[in-house]
Length: 310
Image (cartoon, rainbow, N blue to C red; front, side, top):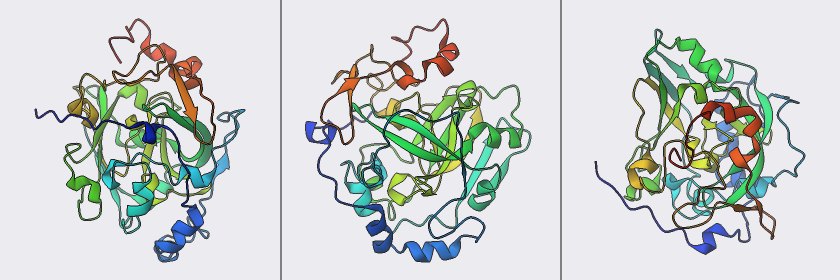
């Protein structure tokens, strides 16, 4: 396997800077109205998604402003700086879009994105998002448990892991012309992680469909792991028997492990993970074990050495 040295993240990227690109302006600039015409009326109302708030998944913390959530992003397919995705993702076409689910399943299927939107009721869940570069957000995501999709294809007894494959088109995603990663982007979870109720198949945020720069039109959110574990712009989900090799593991195996759980006791080789800076705040705060979701997920890793299985 070819190993590509991951890029050095500068301090200017770790520390939030002034953010200028508001969501409404972005939609106006990138033809949001024309995208609305492609969606069924039952799904699209302006740029809103119909959903209900799940009272079991909320936080006593201030939400990160929409303008920050949509303009400070890690999405290397559109560039390595945090501001690049909002500037370069405007022409990304998210319709038509299908997601293939295959591998160790009894009923492999190709799902249309609008079919997925109707597969289960969409709910709003407020989750923390913690990135490996020591910054974090609090975002109201819209989606439903990934387990609902996996159940549809009936996994076999050999399905031990779930691999996600992201969209690949360097003409639409200019960052893919860079060798910073081997494309397409790939990520993976253990099957019990993928089936956990917290793992969200996500189509929106802040009541709206996912903006292009926020991994449209469909992504996974795994809130107790670092953000790069949440696969973006998914086109294929494969249930497999052997642990898949994710893109960041391939790029920097000594820096990015398969599990990538938020653990303040395990430093990244180039910076500490003990503290984080919430976007929009000046002072740092202590990083929480499993990003604050230890009560829900710690049992998944009982008996494991989390310093070795990082």
